Image: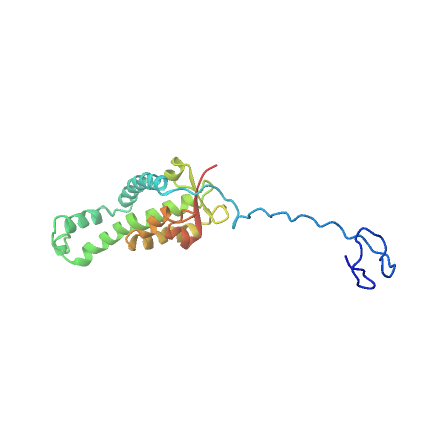
Amino acid sequence: MFCPKCGKETDASGQFCQWCGAPIEAAPPAQAAVAAPDVDEGPGVGIYAGLGRRFVAFIVDFILMVLLGIIVVAFFNQANGIMYLYYLVAAHAPISSLTEAGTPIAALGPIVAAVGLLVVVVPWLYYAGFESSRGQATPGKVLMHLEVTDLEGNRISFARATLRFFGKFISTLIIFIGFLMIGLTKKRQGLHDKIAGCLVLLED
């Protein structure tokens, strides 16, 4: 070690410098460096749900939504719209022949209303309502022990659940690639999950 007064190298075992006699304070022993443990990039929020389990939950929810949609369509007297759509698509009937008025607009109104209820309104309220509820899951997800959370594992709002639902249309339009991302991403997120900042986790 070196003397703090004269700067010359001196015996580390002594209490005084052998050159100038100045007192030398013993340096504290060097502490061994302790390797810091690896730190996760983010908080542990749970186990991410895979594609297979989520697909089974979707099948269950799809069946329930179809049944609920039929009830809603009947309640709002839009059954004619489904009938018109069937004759138009399956039987290839001229659209002008579907109603007594004989005009395309008279048939398109009930068709749009019925399809809107079945494809948009009922599924939106079903998914957004259940996933933002205290249970954080649709009946299908409850059956498969899944829950929808934000990136910190907390309950999501109705607005975020709404964004997640409409994000599914984007996942569908790109040839279902948005759904296939569930099996390819680290956190098992589909495109709609990433858009809304959501996770689907296995319940504890």
